[in-house]
Image 1 (cartoon, rainbow, N blue to C red):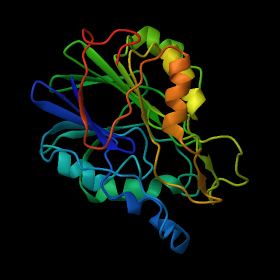
Image 2 (image 1 turned 180 degrees about the vertical axis):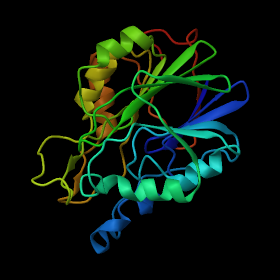
Image 3 (image 1 turned 90 degrees about the vertical axis):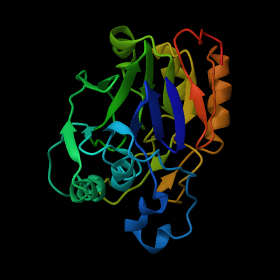
Length: 276
């Protein structure tokens, strides 16, 4: 399977001439735009758009705007292709404030959306797509996605926090030839989640390395780093990818840090523990 890294949390996977996209992001500036003036000039991640009109499915880990860009999905998908997303979490508009922007844009784009429960599998072209458990740092619905084709399995962890499902995920759906793991450990303070937690809202570098070890990752690829930062609102750890690479190496994990637009061939036969 061929993996193209799109930047931030976006990935495009290709097998047998078909693709799926996961959490593509084209308009990085739109993510914090609802905050108005405080967000002007904040650092943005480098992102690239997926290939147009090729994807047989779009996968969304959760409906935060940096993981659910309707325009990026619409541009990537062939006509009528499904977008698979987590189940609804219930609650009122205040509880779901962080989801409203992406949800509204996805609805306006007329995309073919389907909610998938954790542990549920669906097919699209040559791919088997399975939603696995994830836990969002602000309590919003989230899943991880494992994509399987040609005997290769690639796991995308969205921006989950640390949880206790790693062993079940590995037992039921491993081995994972590559794991895309969030590493920026951002501490969050959003208006709808007050008082704020001092704990990270996504895996920090050291937690990410532990998660990859527990999952038995043959190759660990850091994502969700080197981008957004806004004092008092969204504060990531510095040098997240470098810290992750060091922590992962200390646990005997192979690591590959990718540049936006870079493509990597991944197969079960070509990777063994300790190889990159």
